[in-house]
Figure 1 (cartoon, rainbow, N blue to C red):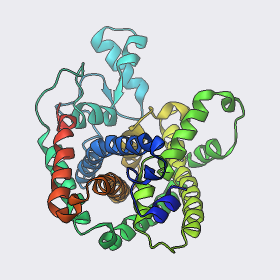
Figure 2: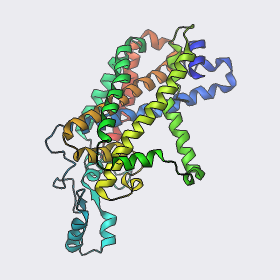
Figure 3: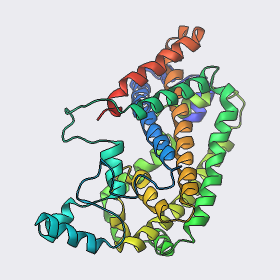
Length: 357
């Protein structure tokens, strides 16, 4: 419906509601939601680029506990009982107290090296220069991908849309050959009825649907506004839904195959292998890649896919917000390159606190 309305009116999310002014706030809400995502998305891309740069090393920095960011409670995956026993003897704490403090090497790399987390939100330190430089490069790439308009960026968008499927196919094939992977697939495909009674599960499922289809962000409206008035958008919508479902299914197979392998390595239940949030991308896969022959290849492939998917999503969201603003303030299009530069510069500046420690 969003694509149809955008195509019919040839307007973005803010101006389309002139057809029903009482709902104008919905368009502004779409812009706010997209702007909030645009605010932080390039930071996630920067983290992925940083991980990929580290993946070219012969030994990953998240493999061992011998770095300056590691503390005494860092352990390596495998033979954990002997490491816990050594910590009990060296610290004088009991087993329960030690286990509460334990972190794997990859968890400490993520939290203590990449994020450099502090105790409170107000405890802001200096800038992480590596992440900052990558963030600058990310916004420069976004700008040049869009400075002649989204319709001129089709080749870039096509590549960003197609390449991840090759990577997913390769990763899926490798994941299903790992020890314990089929336990993960079984966990993924065999239904369990009890969780269906949880409201949280349905909330998370609904959130995922909205995110995966881009509903409510204003992006689909903006992209639809660039279509010709007679374009067959019904076909596009059906095709998009089918591709999205199949992509989610295949990506789920690959991910749960890797989770099954991690469960096999650690002896933990699959539900305990990963923490909520970004841990799946920046903790579980780096840990899994560590134990796969040819680890550098698999890690680089995975993070290149994350980077391209993130870049593609960011371009679309930036287009959604910028198109909405340009419809509301038409003079922005007259000076598109300058206004787009200021737009990207603004979101770069407000994202700077996210690359501090």
